[in-house]
Image (tube, rainbow, N blue to C red; front, side, top):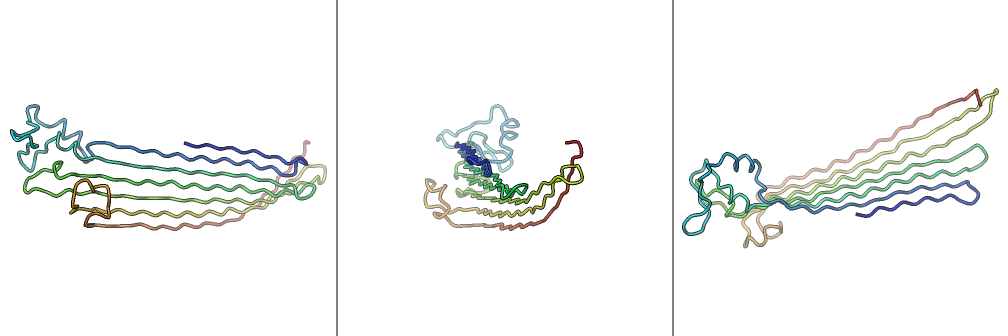
Length: 220
């Protein structure tokens, strides 16, 4: 993990900059990636044999799975998150200040669910090893520029503010099921097998708005 802060004020106090950024990354692995594996373990017969006399996983029928064999499957996830925020203000002339807030965030995840052949029920027929690959990234940018003017008028303090909000985001994702690997050592490489199914998503979002505000204080 990485976290950075930066705070700057010019000598004449007209410019102020505050920045913050952080990056995190996690790598996780979980054996037994089949959905509902905990339920299958709990509901299995207590005397259900794990292996045959030939030291292979024991399978009885299509309706019953071997909970020990299911643990041969595994799930991997690599997630990353980058966030940057920045606020800046500059006093252009007396009573007139330019401000801007800018933020950027990108979060992504790469997932793998690997199912070796020996993790799959051999009924009604033996199945080949397969892997599910998933990838998704979301990037968001937000900017809010403002112009602020302050003045004393009619015995009170007035503040006039005009600004805009600009936002955009991009979502990209891809999912595929791959099989027919030459070797189960290649289950984590989607380029080494045959793609049985593939789907993707691409979403672009844009938003812009403007706003204005007048505030006053008669007691100062």
